[in-house]
Length: 293
Length: 101
Image (cartoon, rainbow over all chains, first blue to last red; front, side, top):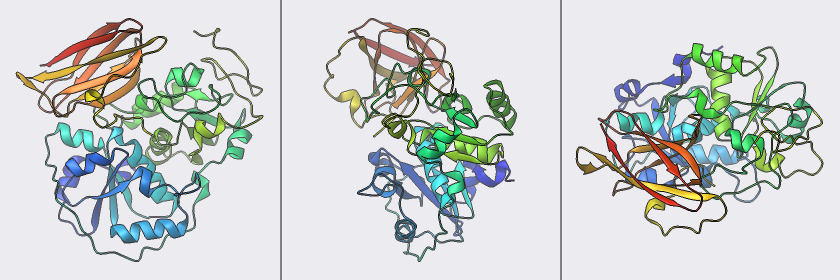
């Protein structure tokens, strides 16, 4: 089992390792302008949209594509990779899960990401970062941490399903976060028997993770059975990567999978059960919005 | 494909509001200056996180939301966390000035 120190570093640690050649800082954003306006000195950029998705199919990069990406970015197998980003580290957590999927041995998150760094008034630079290309070799993908749609259907009523979207998205009142028009599923609702623990409950206002004790209390009170396997999902798999990090890396639960297809896939499948309303519901699904609104 | 702020969203023309949609927008001020890069959170009546944006170069932010009662929680370097309660009706655009302590 990992410990918090092995997977999470604070801003002081990063500051102290800015000149450490064995440490590679990687900023992972979805807002492509963020890195250009300022990044931590020496950090390379991985763009969530352009770098971490297959350009044609809806899928993760293949092993070969991932090797090419990391080689291009100048990352070696032996490097300590520290990921950080905006959006309370959602996309950095997604990249962390990706690095683990392809077997990178030493990868960590900067607790609080860009936000905590900025709130501390620490330095950001617009300097161009160039690293020598490497010959990165990835492992075969570790699918023990990735859920596919059939895994999710099989988990209904038998495993922990953790829906980390907002209560309105969970209940089916919204298809996407309220403030932006975005890609959507065909149907609203949640996977029957899923519990709703929004990602934000695992983090403090400054984006840092809550303590292990607070996190254990949070998921325990929500009904997560730590003796069962778990699948976490959201809408496109990045908020649930944040929760996957909490459950698998911080709390050390075995057999936690992130479902990157998430609700945009599940809510568009033909013939699978869906539950509406605030309750987890029964394996058959059903319910209605009226019961809970 | 974002759950975060669109670049320039606070300065873009307002999108048409249909149904119960509403807008909360404004500026963040710290020590008499417009605060660039402040983090503004929109919390629902249960205190639940709904969205978060960063103010632009002119200290501006904007949330597309729905009518109701909301709280804006703002964090910025050198300032203490500041909550402002906002009530907005369906179809309304409510301007807010957040003054940081």
